[in-house]
Image (cartoon, rainbow, N blue to C red):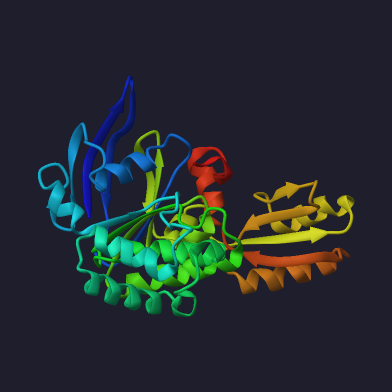
Length: 308
């Protein structure tokens, strides 16, 4: 999947203004960005639901503007709004989608049984969908996207509103279909989701790519590992800051001091010894790596919670 210089205008505002993207087959690309950054617009153009105003894009080897029908035969889009019919059973939902894709009744029933097994829903196949848990409904929704075995899957915030357990279930299914060769473009409101699933992350801001790379590459731009020291008494904060050096960052509300380090375990040992020498009894000393949330904040100027 490739996009070069995509542009899309709504009234007087450019939703996309020179958007570039390259997603190798069989990988997951996480698309992040603040409200109005252009994420949904990009997905809708690549899925042939919107016409572009400039640039070009290819999905599954076909031009999205000139070969839209061929693109549609190769892709599936799973949005935030569920396509599950609560009145039907899990099997009936999948058979219905198979028939909508012009499969014969026998073909649709066979494909439904395959998908129910693949997505771990065989035991609930004959239960009405209204009795499914949130995670089961989402897996059934994902299963419906695979009726025609798409080469490319667009996932628009696939786990919004799910609890951690159900999110984990959906993550496992996404990883499984990617392992089978499907290419995934994922928009998400959870940065840990991008961290878990994405081979590469693209951060959009005002219609352009603000940063891209693997999650680890983006984190490394913030200076790599950090050491954090939490103390019991605020009066000890200056002592800790002195130990961590001139670049130490002090958070008086959390009784915490942190600083970038390059030698990890050696730094942890050195700091612990220096604090003991100064008579500081730390509540906690830990090494941690930057999060994608911190990357997002550094790039866009605000935290990820403001995203759509």
